[in-house]
Image (spheres, rainbow, N blue to C red):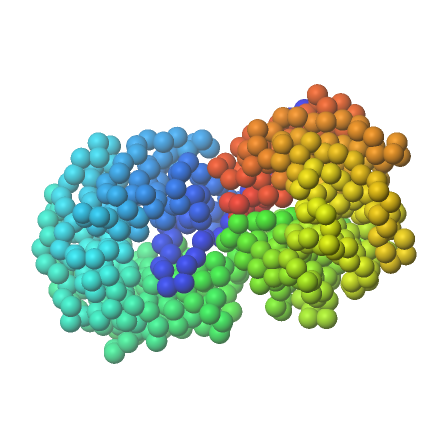
Length: 611
C-alpha cells in the first residue's frame, strides 16, 4: 500500500481589512508568492493550479520575497524570525534563520547581488534591520522612525539606496552599505501612514504610497521629490501597494477605494482605472506586476489578473479559501468530479476536477452561510446540504449554483453535524437536539435528551438514524414515517463520539472518538463490533468511506490520515503530516484510489492511493 500527493489546491492569501498584503514575484517571472497562516504559498503565474506550500514557520508568516538570484526565498513571521530557504529542491531546505528584532515582520528587501537583506516591522527597541544573508551580521541600521515601519525597498542598481515607510507618516532615505540614515522624507508629503515604498527596477526613481490616497515620486539616487501622481490625490481611499512595470515606465497601485490604477510615470497620469467591484470585500490590498501579468488581491483574498483592454472585468479571478477549511464533500456531475469545501467564515468553494478544468475554483452566487460551516453532504436530489454555526441548515442546488432563501431551514440551536439519505431525508445534530428533516422541512425533533449528541448518520436505506453522544454511546433510533423512535438500542464507542458514517452499501457503521479509536459495527449482525482500528496519536475528528466499501479513511488532530482496510485492521496506509502543522478537518473519496483532504491551512490536497 502506498500513496502519492497528486495535487495541492492552495489557499488564497490571508487578508485583514486595512492591512496591506505584500506579494513576491520570482526574478524569472514564472511564480508569485504570498502567505496564509503559517504557510508560504508559491504559485505558477500561468497555471495557478500548480502550487507548492512551505510550512516550516512555527508562527504566522507575514511576508516572503525571492532573492534576485531566484535560488532562495526569505520569509518573515509575527515573532520576528526570518527563514532563508532553498527554492530549487522540493524539500525547501533551510539555509539560515535569524531574529533581527522581536515583533512582526512586515516587509523584506534584498540587494541585487542576493547578499544583503533588509527587514522592517513592529520591533520593540527597533523597527528594522539590514544584515548579511549568510552570517546575519549587521550592515547598517534602520533608524529615523518613531513608529512601526510598514515597508522597505533597496535600489537594485549601484550606488545602493534604501527607503522605508512608516506609521509616523514619514519615509526615510538611507545610503550605504553600511546603510546610514540620510534624511526623512518630510511630513508635509503624506498626512497619514505610509503603506508602501518601492524603487523602480532601473533604480532611477522610487515612490511612496499612503493611507491618505497619495502617491509621490522621488529621484532614486538623491531622494528629491519629483511629483505627486494624479495631482491632489491618486486614489479616493488609502493606497496599500504599488508595483512597477519591468521597464520602469509605468506602475500599478492598489487601493481601499476598490480600484487598481495603471500610471504613466512620465506624465504622472492614470492611463487606466480597474474597477474591482462595489462590495467591501472588493477593496484592493496588494498588487504585483510580473512580466506581462498584472495581479491584484482583494480583501476577499481573491487574486485578480487585470486586463488592460477591459478594465471592468479581470482576465481571470483565482478563488478559493483564505480561512481554515472545516468541512468537505465530493460529488460527480456530468462526468466531472467536484469538491465542495466550507470554511470558518461561511464561504463554500466549488473545485472542479477533470478535463482542462482541474483546479478551477468557483462559488455559489447569492448570500450563503454567515459563520463556520461544520458539515456537508450531497443528497440524491443533487443538493448540497450544509449546516453552520449561523443556526441554519441549507439545501443548495449544485446545478444552479446559487443560494436561495427558500431552501434555508432555521434551527432552534446551533447544528454541528448533518447527514443525508435517499428520499429527501436529512438528520441534523444540534446542541442538545436531534432534528429529522424530510424534503427540506423539519418533521421531528428529539430534545430534552439525557445526553449531549455530537454526530449522526442515517442508514442509506432510511431505516435507522444513529446518533453518537459525548458519553461514548451510539443510540440507534428507528425511522418510522416522520418520526424517530427510541427503542432503547445503543452500542458503545471507546470514547466521546466525534464523527460517524455508514458505508455506501449500508453494511457498516464507522464511529470515531476522542480516545483515538475508530470502531466499525456490522449492521446486519445487530451492530456487533467488526473491528477496532488503532493508530492515531490524538483525537480522531473525521472519517469517510471509499465508494467500494472496502476501505475508509480517518483524520485527526495528529495531522495524520490513515486509510484502513475494513476486513483487516492491520492493513493500513498512513499519511503522516498530510497537512503539516495543521490538523485534518475533512476527508472525501473521488474514487477507490483517490482521496481528498482538507485542513485548517485552508488548502485542499488530492492523493492517489495504491492498494
